[in-house]
Image (cartoon, rainbow, N blue to C red; front, side):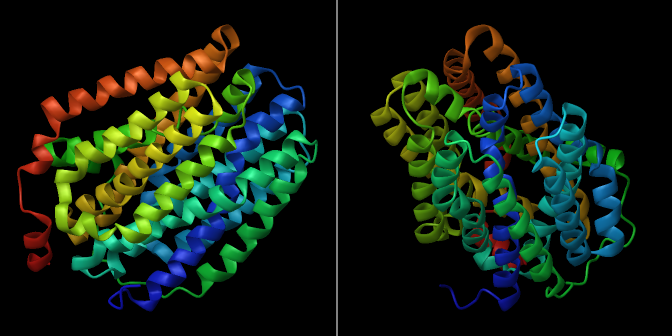
Length: 392
């Protein structure tokens, strides 16, 4: 472990990991709802409600974090998530399911901006890629160690156990968040959400970065929530994809996170290529072996892309604009999570999940080709990571 990483980083990491349990386990929520008799439309509506509320809360997220700071953001975020899960544990009628998902989305929307924003302020500039890479282990550890047994429990009819586990971990995250120390912020006069968006969109590099964040999310949003559903159609298990993906992403982020600091934007095509290639192998192979190989390749892409984009963002954004730009980046990611699951679940009612995920793989491959040929040049034209580190 790099000795240059501050103690505050490890507390924030533990807070993120425990909070993320409640999100990771909800990858299986569509399957649980399906098994309890909810229609595909209701499953999709429950999923997208989370994202709609999350997105609608972004202006509030930005204003709250500019005024109260990241420690309060993580604290309030975990409280809201815990309240939402407490409602969802009972598998109530659809209106209450939507209420629970809404509370969970509002809380995660605040937390998911506050945590990386906190890290960007406490990480030394020359190990930001390393730090964000290690921070990216937080969503992977629950995926690796909890989703396979949780999937087994859900398929066995024990639908509430994963939800109760997520609730307990949210409460642990709340305690950890209270032990964080606020890092002084510079954005005392934070612009409005729309003004910040206009400013960022007028800069080619920031605009492409936001689009890259959306594409990164599309490497997970149409696939992760529904891979278990597609696996049932193909006679295998979703964990055959999710587990190798998590393991390879964990290994890459732990052992190769330093490559982000050294190689910077040169990793854009390799990381996104692996991400999308893994989905294509898994969905078009449609077997346990294809799931294992595709999941491993997908994890390599996930392992590199997550710290790479956060590192680029933290290097290019002025410190006094961190709150606004990290909120915008999170919004770009969440737009993909809002649109893609509804699209997949709606089409699955007609074509089933497997064929829809295959079409998603083809669309993502085309998107990566367009980004490489036309857009990523804006991110590559600029100071290399090493020079940016010295300027910091």
